[in-house]
Length: 286
Image (cartoon, rainbow, N blue to C red; front, side, top):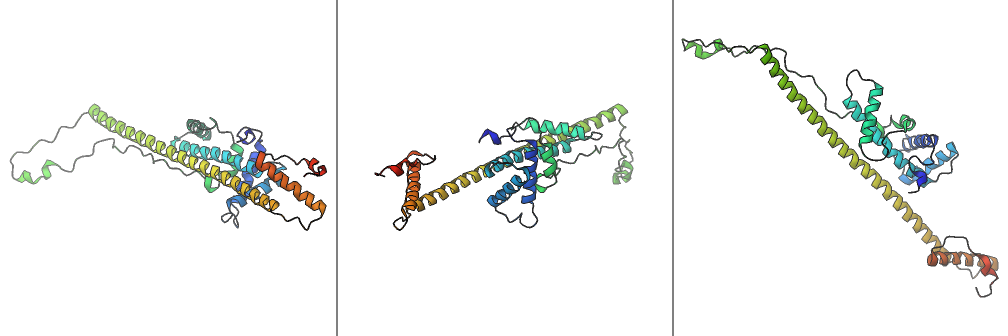
């Protein structure tokens, strides 16, 4: 891919924002957005983008740029979701952004810091980029501060009516022992919770990575199909040029179609797409 369409290339921030706005307007159009074919959608986005920005970017360049922005915005959405799942009571938006940047850089793909904040403001409320919390709910330790009295008192046992001996109730444990017992239970629960959070985070990152890979593969497949369609269209036009009947045409028209045929032959033989050399018109042997 040409460097002009890479993130951080010659694209300006304003052009990125306009591209995101055009993508939102066309793909989420309430009348035609859901039924529009992919290539028609990008043709319409290109027209609106050129009208609003006055840019000369091609439709292919817009599609390639959006592929990169889409990947960065998707990673930022996932990073924000993880940060919100992990945010603690009392922390503010600044803490959330810092955590999200850490998650964003930890993916190991693309840039280490997210920079397209103006683009994010454009797309963040639409379904594709809407943040849905997925982390497990964090609950307080439900271990009571004091042991509740047991309801299975020896005095309630049927064996009391048959035995003359009344067993002594168990000696209550001391404060230190009770505190140590509660602390051990709480520590175990915290370890289990952290392990579950780590497991869920790993699964989400793996799922997000696979989804990003599928998006990239789908975009690359579209580019290949578009190139094949263009080559097929060129082949059809060249076949018509070579099969053109010039017997009934004027000398000037015959000369024109002869030039077109020569261009076709030159492309086929030498893969040369340059303009024709018209010196052959003065050559009696051609």
